[in-house]
Length: 102
Image 1 (tube, rainbow, N blue to C red):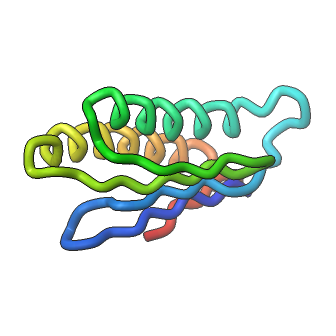
Image 2 (spheres, rainbow, N blue to C red; image 1 turned 90 degrees about the horizontal axis):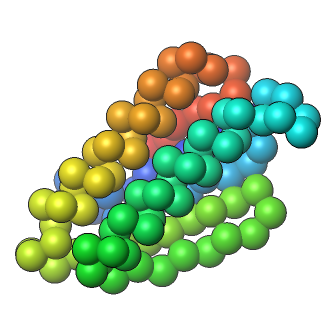
Image 3 (tube, rainbow, N blue to C red; image 1 turned 90 degrees about the vertical axis):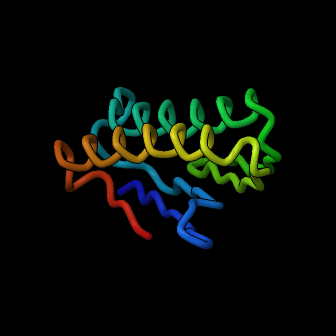
């Protein structure tokens, strides 16, 4: 199962961690691919708008933290909300393969 956890500080996401393999289908794991796409695209979009980021990536794990200025906070929140909406929808379709944690 893939677990995606979110750390909030002052009501805003400051860290995202996706860990584990979903176990949907060896070699054709669409759930794992979808999680990776959502999380990594959010990370890249945050970098693109100038949010200070740090990340860790290794086998079965991608984790990033962010530090926003007042100028980037709104846009960062929009990006992170889009990511969480996509992940929630994915979890509703594949509850045995992905779990979201706060």
